[in-house]
Length: 152
Image (cartoon, rainbow, N blue to C red):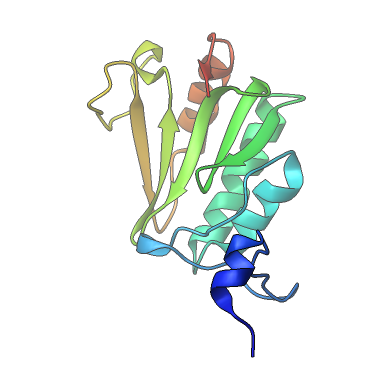
């Protein structure tokens, strides 16, 4: 019999099988380990439930085609996009009924994305099932990628 306390004290982490699907947190947001590069972002997108995975893949493709050499990471169970590591202009987060796109300096975008925040500079775009305005999204991504970005 394995003593759980002694495993914890010894720093032995509980491991999941390699083929285990990521755990979905509240609202259906995938729990993906922090990591830099395309692989963790693609793991997040693949784990997004239902129609949200296709939306995540489309958003990712639009960002890649709009911002050559875009940097990617998963932090706090959300994909981040930026011009350099740890300086981000945009992030995604999966909720039960929509995918939230966070523009970290969205108040500087014209026109501003519709979702307001308690943080003065941040603006949101909530994408629900169905089509979204890709042309406007691409324009916001172009603008956002030219701004200084947020260090995180």
